Each structure stands twice: as C-alpha cells, then as structure tokens.
Length: 223
Image 1 (cartoon, rainbow, N blue to C red):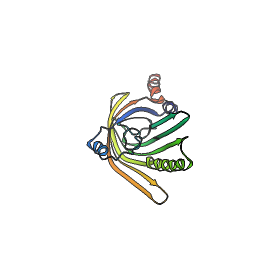
Image 2 (image 1 turned 60 degrees about the horizontal axis):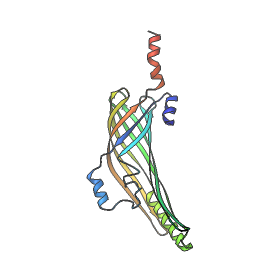
Image 3 (image 1 turned 60 degrees about the vertical axis):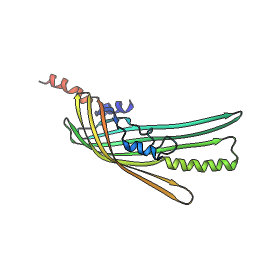
Image 4 (image 1 turned 135 degrees about the horizontal axis):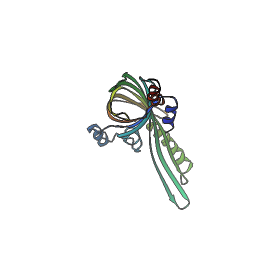
C-alpha cells in the first residue's frame, strides 16, 4: 500500500498483481530425488517462492517499470520439558526486484526484464539442556544451515500483457533464471549454481496516474 501511494505521488502508474507458475514434472522429480533443503524453507522447497507470487510495482513513464515481491517462509519448534526449553527455527526472507523496459508501450505492451533476488536466511538451535560442547556443535550446524539456505540470483527475459479493461491486464512472461548458493566450513567451500527457464502467467490490476486522471478535465476545459 505504501508503494502504491508513493507511486501515485510521483505521478507514476502503480499496479499490483500475481504471477502464476504451474508445477511441472521437474518439480516432482526434484522432490522425489530428495533435492530439497531438508528444512522446508529453502529456495527450491516451494514455499518461499510459491507457485502463486504476488507483486506490486509501477510504470515510471511509458517505457520504464519497476516491481517487487517478497517471499517469507519460517518453521519454528519449541519443546518444554519441566524447566527445560529447547527451540529450533529456520527462516528465509526472499526479496526480489524486477526492472522492465517496454519495447512496445502500446496495448499489447511488450517488455524485456532483468531481475535480482536474494535468500536471506536465519537459523537458531538453542536448548537449556545442552552442555557447552553440545551448544558449540549446534552453533556450527546452524551456521552451515544458514549458509545452505542463503543465496542470490537473477533473471533475464521478456513478457507481454494485454488490457482486458482499463484496470485489468493479462499477460505472460518467460525468463532464464539463475540461482547461486554456497556451503562453507572450516576446510572447504562448496558452491552450487542452478540455471533454468521459467514461464509465468500474469494477472495485473492497474491504477491510473494522477496526470491521466486530470487529462480529460483539461481537455474539457480547453476544447
């Protein structure tokens, strides 16, 4: 909501919508082969980057657009046994920002895009029953978990949308997406890179800019 109000104040054309990425057989194979993070909140676990991803953004002029989205996944477990408390949690926040450049501003609008995303991890493993050595071992495991859950990436692609009515458009986009993560320990650094194509259906609601709202009034006042 703040982004929409700011866009209106700047005279831009704000919009909000959702990208739908249908599941494929590749998703099923990924799960069957046990390639998930093991914590349920990683990049490829299907939660922090869901099949239905909301977004919000604005067109700043006829050719330049920015949009952003945020994915959040968290799993926390607390155990109470008498006066003893144990807590384990794993979380990932995944902000993403896309830059769109329209090569055809008219309807249907055609654009190219470049995007960037980051997986920001958090992990905790604490217990009042741990000895000092056990807590140190748990801290090392937590650092490895954060390293495994974290990562950065980006995408290049193109898209098109068609206005069904002035406030609603439907479109499709196709991207080549890259994600890179790493696992560090005291003796080695292991990196992994994922590169794959990505197609999405887009449903977008548009708000007219203030200058567009004033246009008809100006024309009526000056025939």
